[in-house]
Image (cartoon, rainbow, N blue to C red):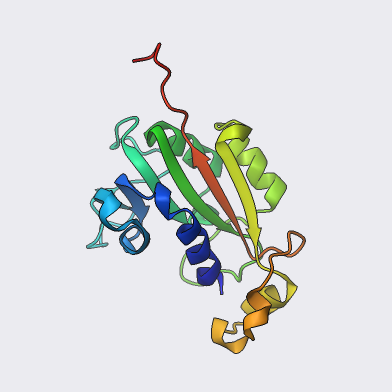
Length: 193
């Protein structure tokens, strides 16, 4: 269920998936939505066993990545696994090139992941506050995806195909399934060049 919303968000923002990109786990979404606008893509993972990873590191302290490196960072359903999401947001700010964007999604009340220890869930105001620590409001867009019906279906373990098409026709901010965050690093002023 959440993948449908994630892919809708990324599709709506595909113009930002360009240049040098970073994605966590694999480059699936960068390749799917970036196309020929992507010049190169790095894959970040904390696990050295991930054959797709080009960078082994922790987003909470990503010392192996230089400042202002990426034009786009795709971070879907990752922050819930981190002990310090604020540190990860600070690292996003640091590694984004001027004018670069991060496309982030987080769960609200997703089922607990039995294979990886997820430590938190998010709500719209909390997400705004989290990103406001390092990005100003003009740089940040927060949106909710989902509604009561798709949420109940998701939490019950149903698939997208189990719901009628009209179930996907609206997003209710009172019953979000996921939250999307789009942040953009400010472009350098001519004084900084």
